[in-house]
Structure formats: C-alpha cells, structure tokens
Image (cartoon, rainbow over all chains, first blue to last red; front, side, top):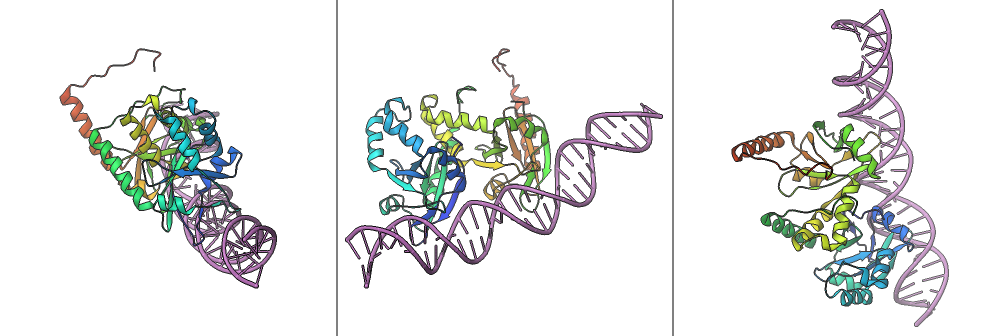
Length: 153
Length: 153
DNA sequence: TCGTGAACCATTGACGCCCATGAAAACCCA
DNA sequence: TGGGTTTTCATGGGCGTCAATGGTTCACGA
C-alpha cells in the first residue's frame, strides 16, 4: 500500500462531515472497502484510523503483530470493539461519530496525520502542542535513529 | 540506488517551486514514486529528504517495533508524522510547504546537499556557516572515520 | 407527516499541467 | 583545440482541472 504521510487540516461542517484527504483515500481504496476504520487512541486525545487491510491484520492474526507489546491481545480486542466503520460519501467525506468527536476534542477542524500504514485525526491545536513536545524531547535527548538494513523495510 | 552527492543551489519562485537537481531526480526516480519525502531536521534549520524506498524503511521499522528502542520509536514516529510527500511536476520541481520553508529559514534560494541515500535542503548562507563550523570541529577534534569493510556498504 | 441521513449538484480556490524562454553544458567537426 | 551547434536543464507564467466545501433535494423509516 502507498504510504500515508503528510498532515492535512480539513473542515468539519455542520452535519459532521469531513473530507478525507485525497492522497489518503487513494492509498486506502485498494483495501476493498471505500472508507476507513476508526477507533479512539489509547495514549492521546486523538482518533486512530486505518484501512480494511490493516484492520484485518488486527482481527485475524493478533499473534502475527509485533505492533503491540505485552498486552497486544487485550489491546487488539479493545480496538476492534471500539472501532467504527466509516464509509466515504460520493465526495470522499466521512461522518465522525459524536463519541470520537468528543474523545479527540474535535471542533471545527480536523487534522489528518499520516503514520505510514495508518493515520491519526487530531484537533489541530492539540496536535501542534503534542508535536512540539515530542520534538523537544527528542532534541534534548539527542535522539539518534538506527534503521533496519536495506531490503527489510 | 545511485548515490546522492554534491551541492546545488536552485531558485525558489513565487509559487514556492524549486527544481530538484537532475542528478538527484535520476537517483530517486527508481524508487517507484516520482517525487521526494521531506521532513524537518532535528538538529539543524534544514529539511531532510529522501525517496520512497528510504521512507518505507522508516515505516517498516515502526510497524516492526523490534527494530526500535522506545526512543527510536518516538523518533521514527516524529519523522513519519512530519514528513511531506512532494511529487515532481513535469519539469522536476517540487513545492516546498510553508511550514518547511519556515523551519529551514528558506528565502529565495535553496541548497540541495547530497548525503548518500538522503539529502538535505538548506538556506545557502546557513549552510555555509554550518559547513564552516563542522569543518572546524572536525579539525580541532582530529576526527577519524572508521569505514565498514567492502561489501557491507 | 415529520425527522434523519444519504445522494446530488454547484461553487471556488488551489494545485498540477502545459508551453515558452534563457542559459549553460555537452557535443561535434573542422 | 577552438568555434559553432545542439541538447538539456532551470525558470517563469498562464490556464484548466479537480479536490474541498456548502447547500438542497430525495428516499426511507418512524
């Protein structure tokens, strides 16, 4: 699947509709279902989202996932139970359920943040704070990154 | 992939477009996506950039968490979340997002600096200062470099 | 009949595509 | 080796298309 990257701020209209960025739709629509799966993030006031392929990895083989450490089974279960299936309308928009709106503290705008195979939806201001903090932590720590060797990616 | 080397200064036009040096485009266009991925550098007022293959290594590293310590995981996330996918136009130019323009202190010109598998984009004057400092540091430290043996490239 | 939600249509503004120009480097041939 | 020619690359601007957005209509269930 094409990588989900970049940040896009879109408006949430009076009906609760938001356009999913075109590049995200393109990356996801090979997944079989024209829409996204969304569930509340554990660590942040944000919405985690992905396409059907990734969701199937969660539901099918939690065992095969390195993604989550010790409590991976529990987490996958919680994700599945809390996930919403949000189809695109003909213009590529979704309707964000009230529960998720509240969890992510969403108001007039929603920021879509690409994370490779998934993406997150934040309130733009919350994300800006979160990002700034993460940046500073990494900088003050003098963070370095060891990459997997070529071909393993 | 061919190595990215050399320094090139190109002009940023009124629309925010810059030509990516031809030699860089040639080295990257075997990556599957005709364009670059760009994200702000931690340590410098500069833009880090790479092709899709390199970005997928990062994305893969996040998904296969084993490769990363906690710190490295954070860092990879920050890179992924801050990355922009910048496609070439038919003339081989990209549009630099306002946020990156600001981070790298870019004005009328952009300097592309090859770094092997990636490259950086600097304001030409900032780079000159940075380069001078790095030179001095290395000299005063008596820097040496241990190379991997042939074949481990 | 009324309320809810989804499909349809219309607007606009940004972005990508196209062509034209200029400059520089590579190339060719005498 | 030097001059002339050709190709390629960087640059600038105009224009068309499409993505994002807002409103209205239509279908269906209560």
